[in-house]
Length: 130
Image (cartoon, rainbow, N blue to C red; front, side, top):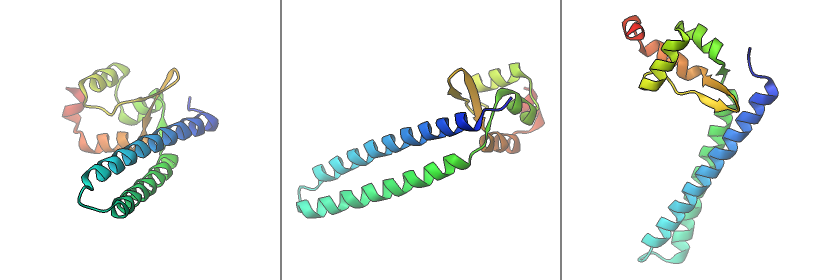
């Protein structure tokens, strides 16, 4: 059972909003730090530097939002089928930190397909059954 397009769109929008807020806060911190370090620089130079950093962060946020829209999310059943592991192994490996972490959306957990594919290519059969 996969998530509906509306649920995916809402979750993606929520993730983009959170990412943008985080990057805006980081940009504000960087601007404050730059302003504090600008004792030798003029105020105009500090403002230009902060504006350039903010523009770079905004461009990065837009790129991240576009990438988030193209990610495919997998339900637990889809993840188990793709990775060819049992539910117990999934939980044990996630707890041990050897399997990608799930993203909790409401009562459901989803995994990002690219992370699962990366895990599959990096992991040998012997490591899976350990």
